[in-house]
Length: 84
Image (cartoon, rainbow, N blue to C red; front, side, top):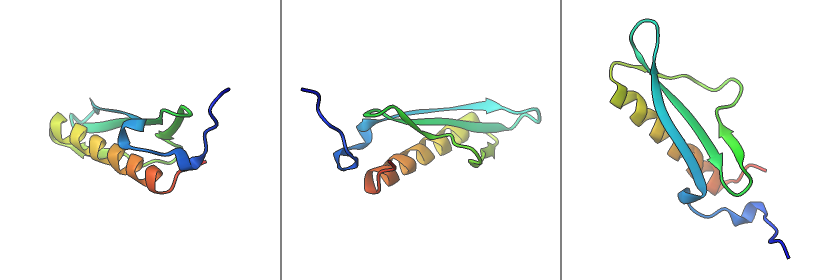
């Protein structure tokens, strides 16, 4: 029998895939890139229409770090108040 899932099944940050990286824009600045996916239902929580740009930063490390921090904030927020 399949296990039913509900919003109350939210567990831990490990229940999310957080893909953080960076790109270099035309002016040579580094922009963070991010994709956050809730594993249990494969829902993409980030990016979304109208989401903010992560950066720009002078280094790739700073851009990636900012993307990771944002991804963790999104996962934590979904754990606290799961989006349907």
